[in-house]
Image 1 (spheres, rainbow, N blue to C red):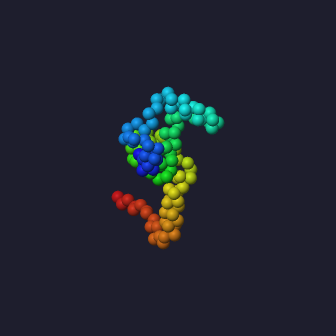
Image 2 (image 1 turned 90 degrees about the vertical axis):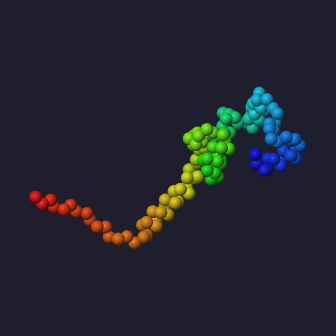
Image 3 (image 1 turned 60 degrees about the horizontal axis):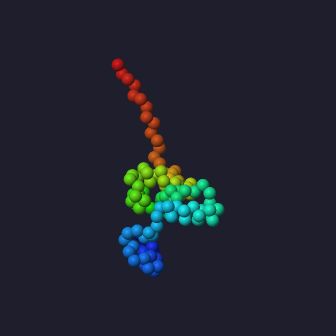
Amino acid sequence: MSQTLQETLKMINVRDISGVVFPISVRSLRAAYSRTLEKAGITDFHFHDLRHTFATRLVQAGVDLYTVQKLGRWKSISMVERYAHHCPESLRPGVEVLDKFITNLAQSPQEPQKRVTEKPVTP
């Protein structure tokens, strides 16, 4: 639990922040979630989709997959990879590293290439 959340819960007088924070039934939570989506005009969005968003935002912010796995309680890194979706922009730093490497390689002085020739076979 983040420090910000802990402080917020203390401000609203939640006594025990070590266990269940909001004593609400799954049924009530689903109903509230559905009403909220309806009021916001959001369609075709499921509660489970928030898990994808959670993983994606963390990975795009540079959080390593191991940490995301532990925070989201996924059993394996491969499951995190299914949930965390990269946008094309988040891949740009990797492309830029390759670009710098290729540029440096092209600008570095190179020795003339020696041509490899086969030796004649003598009987």
